[in-house]
Image (cartoon, rainbow, N blue to C red; front, side, top):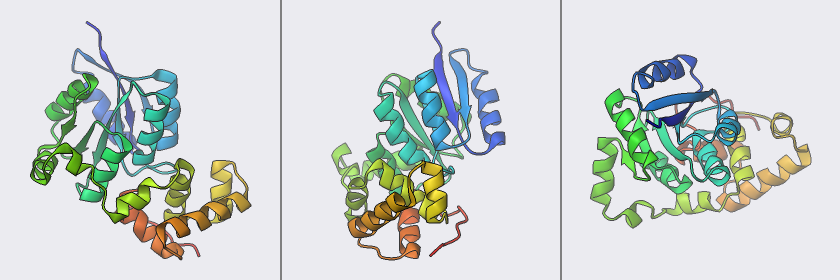
Length: 227
C-alpha cells in the first residue's frame, strides 16, 4: 500500500510530536518531515515533495499563509491543509486565496485530521465542520473566494512584500528585516514604502493592525511596534 506522505509545519515542538505520534498510528499515513517555521516548511516541501503539508498559520519568519502560497508555486502537486486556532473569515479567506486545499481548527479531532489528509491527497477540499457550514451559507464556491476590500489589497502584494509585512508586524526593525531576508536596508525601505502606498496605511502600527486583521499573523502573537 502506498502511503500518503506528510510534512508537519508548526512552531511548537510538542504539537508536531503529538501529530506525528497520532498520524503514524494510521497504516496509510507517513510523516516524512517537520518544520518549525514557514521558511523551513518551504525548503522541506521542495526537498521532500510530500503529498500533504499540515501547515500552522502563526509561525515566525514566514507565516503559514504565505508559506502555502510559495509551497504551491514551487511544488504544485503538494496539497496544503491549514491549521489554526481561529476561524475568523479573514484567516479562512486568505487561506483559500493562497491555494490551501482545506482549513482545520486546532480543536479538530484526529479522526477528522486523518480524513482531511486523505481527502486533499485525492484533490478534494476539506474544512472543519463549523467553517464548512459557514462557507455553505455564503453560497457557491465562487462567493467564498470573493475578496472584500481588504483581501483585494492583499492580493496585490508580492510574496516579498508579504514577507516584509509580516516581519514589520512582528516588530522587526529595517536592519533585522534586511538581515533575515538577505537584502539591503534600502530595499526594505522601498518595500515598506510600496506596502504603505498599496494598502493606504502610513504608519507601522497601522500595518501591524492590518496584518492581524488579514490573517497574516494571528492576534495572539505578541508583537512590539517599532517606529
